[in-house]
Every structure is written in C-alpha cells, then in structure tokens.
Image (cartoon, rainbow, N blue to C red):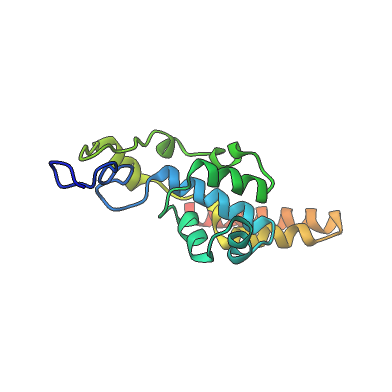
Length: 164
C-alpha cells in the first residue's frame, strides 16, 4: 500500500539518509567504532558476523556506515565485543553529533555541511590498528618506550620539515 506521495506506507522515504546519498555521519562513526574494537580484538568480520547471526558482508556495511545499526543489534555487538553500548558513541566528532536525522523530503543545509566535512576517525584505519596491535605485542617495556620515542621524533621532524 502506498501514500498519496507514492511512498510505501509505514516507511518514510529517505528517512535518516541525506539527499547526497552518503551515510549519516553518526552511522559512520558507530561503524568505525565497531571496526576499531573488532580489529583490536583480532576478530575477523566473518567471526563477528557468525557471533551475531550475520554475514560478513552485512558487518562490512555496518562498519562503513552504509547500513544503520539498530538498538538490539548494537546491544548484541556490545556483548560480543565486550564493551558498553556507550563505547560506540565515544569520541564522536562534533560534526557527526550535530548531524540531524533527515525526515521525509526535508534537506537541512547544516546536515549537508556536516556530511561533507565529516572525516572518519584515524584510529579506525587498518594501518593504525595493526600498528597498535603490533606495538603491544612487544613484551619488553623499555623497547616499547624507545620505539614510541623514536616514532614521536620522526613525526616531529616531518612536521618541522613541512613547516620550513
């Protein structure tokens, strides 16, 4: 059955999805936090999917923010990943937190700005996560500290070179 506008009854066309076709920044952030925790645990998308009754493709869509994670699924994820539900919303950038969920055909210019300026958390990048996991596999604390200091020194030198 359809409404007068031709939209399916009981479902709002485009609700929550900006007209740009890009995922909502909040969904992207929550998905990146799922990926962060899964990767830190060394769990594959397939393993996570099995644990909550999904395919790895569905987990991929959640992690990209392409599909919104419902409350009950978020609760399941928190149990499997051994974190509180609030973990998925921690460190949310102001741009994502201020993004408004779009209703029907409303297009908020502030939402479009938030979607276009939102940058995913660098901690969600595979390279960063693998680096952190490798770092914590170093059993000798003094070696770990020296590596940390070396990394900071190289980064400082790179910033100085770029500025000069």
